[in-house]
Image (cartoon, rainbow, N blue to C red; front, top):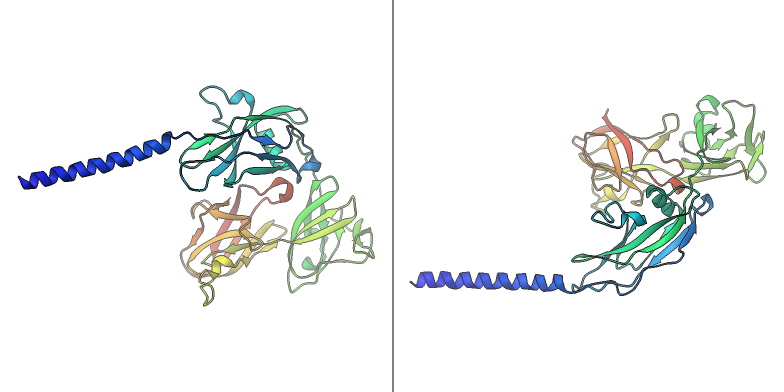
Length: 366
């Protein structure tokens, strides 16, 4: 009899604790939470142009949402058109922009708002309406009242053509010189690697011949038919930009690299050395592909730009040969040895076009 009484008491205790937990959850969920004020935009009528691409064009701000749970609140913006925020499918196809934890404002560049407006179906060079609301999330999602913006998007004119960059890096052979593609009227961009074993001089040619070319003037700017070579500062890989309108050029250090525990063993001072230091790749300007050749350990690798995690690509698996922007995955090297790694990406004019969602790669044991 005592045994059954003990079992009954234990069962009652479990039921009581379960009911208490359930009641607490219900009380938390049912407590009212809402935005205490309106979402505000720094401008409600915005005309976008190519000149505003890299400029902040609107700032959204909103009041803090107070939840009964003491923890960071995550905020996001949702964009849609007025006809799509009604009925059972309201906001289902909205474009969502993450803002972050406990952030109460978000600024958008012209390029970002332009992409959103065009993706929502607004016509270029015609004013149209989009609606914006703020999402807050902690133990549930709460939405602000929407506000309406009048936005005039634009479509960037597609520019074709290229100029060519013969130089010491490829023995000034115009037939194999790197092509710099047009990114705007009179402006060209591309990538070149200058090896340590070659010189640092180069010129710009408008055709694959020497009928018309640009060399350096006394200040290092472009001058037609000048015999003086331009000079890069040091060996390495660069993003080259040439403006024939202003007769100026720039060379920005620019290099993709592989990173991961497959690239380097831990050191005494850094147990994650391979993840903290990129192994640089060089650019094949004829194939428009980045390449690494060297010894790898068994382990993982990814690709990142300029030895930083700001722009990085990871693989979802070892089989499809595709790297995905900001993906947490990596390619696994199963056996140590000497490998050739290639990475191909359409990264022309990333300042205006952004970086593509994917790139392709190969891993070959040699």
